[in-house]
Image (cartoon, rainbow, N blue to C red; front, side):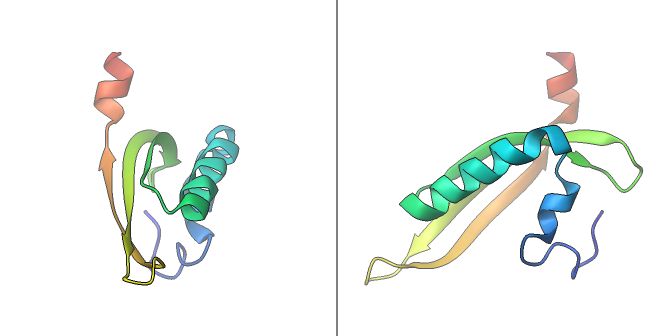
Length: 85
């Protein structure tokens, strides 16, 4: 539910549920520092105002020098599954 400019930089964190933010930031920073895949499930605030569970997977693409060239990721809505559990 965020506009393009809203999620740039760390703006995407504004959509993360406040109770999940510290855990999400810690996991993301660990993945960035270790250049390893990040897999998380957390709640986001939907444009409707409802909180919904999502699952993310972010994978670093490493260049020949061992640096992260870019991150490729997916975000899936898993709210129905989480609520049924």
